[in-house]
Image (cartoon, rainbow, N blue to C red; front, side, top):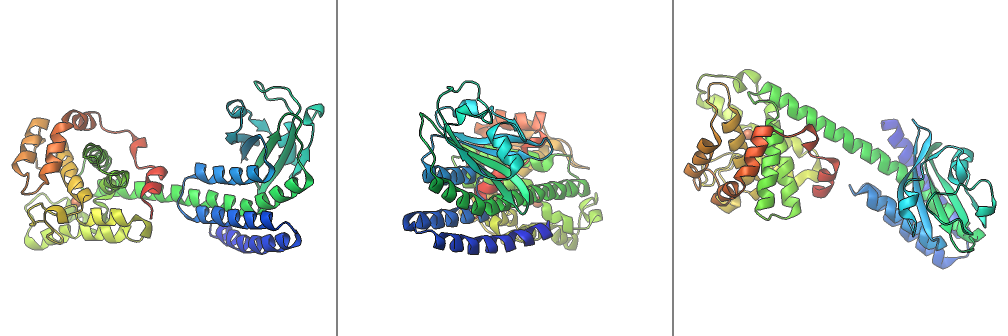
Length: 406
Ligand SMILES: [Fe+2]
């Protein structure tokens, strides 16, 4: 992976130099400016933890605006199946085009993928190379396809169509080829960033399950706290960023316990003052651990303060009331609900009714009364999470992380 990233970075620099060299040779000032601006946007999007769909759409829209084509297909290459999968389509027959999966060598785009060379063909319906897509009119059409290749690796094919006898020009082909060649480095970059994010989520899953094994939790505690926190934040009408921060914060609230001795976490006898202080360090340790990922600032705060009490007698900073981040106030209640209803060694399992009595008893003292009140409103939904648990796929997704990344 490291070698790939080095190759990618070098290639990005080379590609940028190449861009200016190639564009300097063309006398088309407006097109030059347009492509430079679009390349800048696409490169920036790759580095931001954005949405892949938006990223691909922007690349496609750029090529489309160079050629004024009527239809568009962005094929991703699947090396295992040696096929081209339509990932993004646009135009009057976009739904039909979504079903146009091709094998390498099959049809116009398959041919371009096999030959690894862009071509265009006006009045392509006369050619045996073009494969008719079922559900689209068999009318006069012109085709232009460019393979997306980076560092020798085929990533996909961009196919454009002009309908009703309209033709592509050599200049349109030339400019879209330059842009696709440049964008290929960023498409490859996006793929690596996406893989890194996937790896990051897998690491977090491992971290959470390690903490659960180490501590006295019942399996799935963190995911249940995450789900309950999300439900509360939604019901309170929190903005999306706060909802997702509550969800991810709920998931990671106790990761700092990775740094606490297991015998202390599992000790059944009453803890002395030193031992209590030691365990309490987990909220700061967890915040410091997640702070290594700078983009998750909001989650860091929610973890640090998930044991602050509403009356100011909690830890680590003794914050009170509204000074405690709302996400931490939510996670504290969600954590308490799951801890009481799932039980811990030496402690009895509370019924839902008993748990809600405790919430009311400690409202304003430990818990934010607004959060407690919300839990009463969505008692059925929370009970459902406790009774039936949550599925593995309810672990935070890449999309969740994208929403809170700064
Ligand atoms: Fe905790």
